[in-house]
Length: 325
Ligand SMILES: Nc1nc2c(ncn2[C@@H]2O[C@H](COP(=O)(O)OP(=O)(O)OP(=O)(O)O)[C@@H](O)[C@H]2O)c(=O)[nH]1
Ligand SMILES: [Mg+2]
Image (cartoon, rainbow, N blue to C red; front, side, top):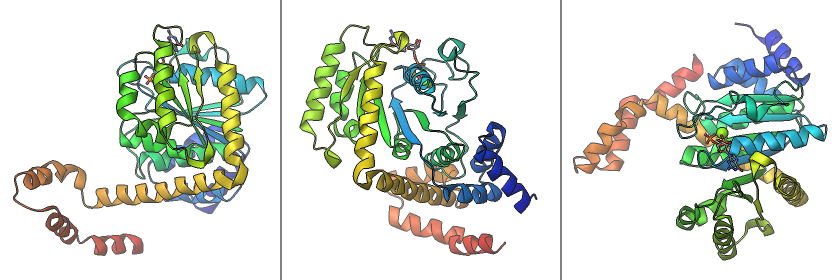
């Protein structure tokens, strides 16, 4: 294996902003490669300045379109931009971020822009953990802004939001009922609400619904989430959205909130990696259906099952053995 020299090479080239080396390291991290982890450790020790923006929302609400507008905006301000698209090909809209020439027109060849897609499957360390790792790699490349696109459904994807300093939750007209049903859930995630496709009917209704939900919820850290109407396809409302994103950044930067947010993201990384390694070690994924059936039928209880799993797998021994290998 390559060893120290290669590690230095990777780290050094990433710090120069080299996209090829960054991609290589990202693949190593996804595979759970130990040399990759060593590079990541070194890169984390070098402080970065990036603002990490999460853009979340249901499939097809216009996240990618919004992000390309945001990327335009930042590039025009001479910023270096990274985009991480988690599971960019949803079955509903069928498009992939990179594949959409129309959307990316004018920026896809820009040297200061780096886009990386990320499948939701196949992460040795868990998806949120790997997203955080990718963010740190992009930060080490010298990106000023890193935008993470994630579909806001399912625990895995929502947890991706924790890696962001600022989360833009994107909704569209007609979604009022969903939002009412989710109340606390969406408040927990969103720092800013973008009501996209504002060219459509029902935009004021959804704004009213959101206002009500926000008004009923207690805010953490004294931030009152603003609602911005956007029409990403025609660039309307983007300037206002960018102002709110900047306001939020200033808000979290004040009083050391940013640091505690980032440490919380690392905590999640550790828990996720541990969970993912344990699941792998005891091959839980394959057996879970069967276990659930047995518990459902009253054949076993959950505590006994867990004890049995742990014993059967001789988990402690295996972990020790792996560590000493
Ligand atoms: N009418 C209208 N259509 C929009 C707007 N923004 C995006 N769209 C369209 O909505 C569709 C989905 O847009 P995307 O940007 O791919 O949405 P997404 O949320 O990234 O989708 P997934 O990544 O598949 O979840 C595309 O056909 C866009 O052109 C808007 O403001 N108004
Ligand atoms: Mg998309």
